[in-house]
Length: 255
Length: 255
Figure 1 (tube, rainbow over the protein chains, first blue to last red):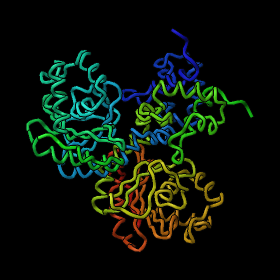
Figure 2: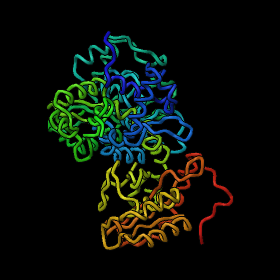
Figure 3: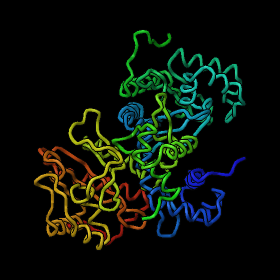
Figure 4: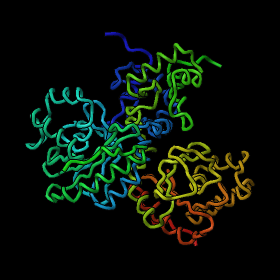
């Protein structure tokens, strides 16, 4: 184990902030980043001067606007979301259900956008939230189109269970992934919570590779899967085209 | 002038990325950050391992997903935008015009959200873009409700001109700001481009202070100002309430 470098220490200050801890005192930061109070004070000072952190009236630190401005350039973050938003809005208008946009990071999906009506109830996932691939519709769509070795590695590792319906058998997961590739849609039926179902479709980038996924989450009691499939596929194709994807004549959905 | 500290050097790598330069080679980064190639290599390596940067197949660096996830916690960035989005969507549905959400950073507005139909033409401002306060509707709304000394300082400095209609006379700007406070809306009529007009209203936070502004931008030829005013004010009040603002009985719009 090597001592943390100066860049590592600075990044550990940023990493101290997460959804459970969006506002931290200097003491909190020092403790969560594993830094002495003196070092934390110096690094927080530099980050605040630059605008990566902001200090409010009560002396508590928040993530700052300048960091947000730089992060807005992330091609897999806000940039993707800017291209996708009109299509997500159309999908929301067509279904009036929760609409999500997600990308894969290792074995997890990261939600880039989440549209829900003000009165929408049920599942609440924050933008920036993470979830294991095999449980969610977007995760299955992303995993099914990842490199074969990535899929095999994922299937071989333990599969966390969230409800009695979560896929935990690697053989069954392999069959589901093959179905997703064949049909062009992924369905997560009560695999995250027992009252929700999601229908997802993969989004392709300019080079044809799957870079993101879009889904609709509905109360499971609705069981409108056949109705939702064309809408979700259409939204995914629209976003793919906007990203520069050109459908090949060979590309054809399954029966 | 003191030598840059380790944190400053790391942050200068992040600052090398902007809207004109969202993708940079190591050489670009070293040049734009004013660092030796060796130092740039070391810092880019640390940022890439952490996930603040991502290297694509061609060796070019982009802002990474992990930075986006941390930045999503910024109360004045994505967090504000999450609360505001349903109201912005309603405003878009009601008007079918470009809808913006912005905050103030020093003498500039920073656009946090920008909704426009896929077919919308005309003004194109990116999320994260900046603009001087006195030219835009949102900027006038934010400046009018900033501290008196902030306003005085802004009025006393040179006022950049973008069209023949941009306010460049400090006396006139002071009168316009007083009008904004009296009426509760700010209008920028051809002050940014000669074909566009915007109507903005201030958004208040829990403590009653103005923290953001919302606006609608329309082609100037439409001149629908009186029609737009109630819609924009309604959206601003809806977002303010969602942020925890409680209207005081004393608060009353002007005649």
